[in-house]
Length: 319
Image (tube, rainbow, N blue to C red):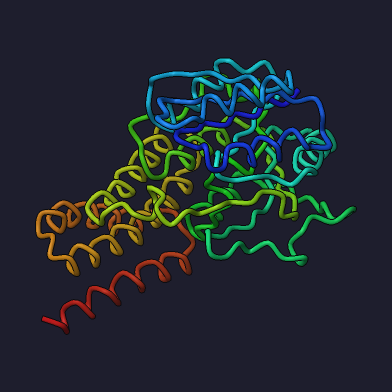
């Protein structure tokens, strides 16, 4: 069984579309754990009505706020051998879980991920070209090196998020989402899971549809709050350092941190946030030192350091 966890807060405008896309899956052995956390609209009533029509839908109401908390509650209530996550304003292909489950079974994988399309209220990038097609589920087995290089050095979003994946419950153990993280909590969860996994597989089909609302937290948060991304990445680095795995993985995260902190510094200068600039300078120095002395391939060091010093020199020229 696959336990699909759907956290939802004030989702009356879109939760029915989301749930219906899951109940319409060609893979039938699922349960849908919809965790409603403190909504002030009629989300709960919609969930109750949907559950009355399909016994696989299991609504849970909690006053504990936050996406990570809701997901963790869902995990603790899950009965399935596999765990999946869907955000309430997104939807999935009817073939998604059949494809992922087939790949997991064929390859003996602990984690399987697929491609996704994304869009906004104005435009959803869902064309015939990226609709899932029969017989198009080419699978690639990923080493840990592959995964961390793609996650941090290539910044490929599909490796960082939770919602385009199928997680083996036994492998998950006590891994949970960190409620203290607010921007990159998915990546933090995913890297812990990969460190615990024996085999990861990626299939080349677009099966998840990510709906990016214009007023979502990730789009409307002020530049000051977005500095939280830097601290979330530092938490990743701490996990990788304590894991006992290759230092290369930690150094990949440091390279990502250098790039991210540099960008946040430029934004802080643009918006004249002197205190944020002071926060970021020692973090950038730490990341730069780690990249210089670390185990990244030389070409990757040159790429990240070259970009860093380009912006340093450009900043000096503007003074």
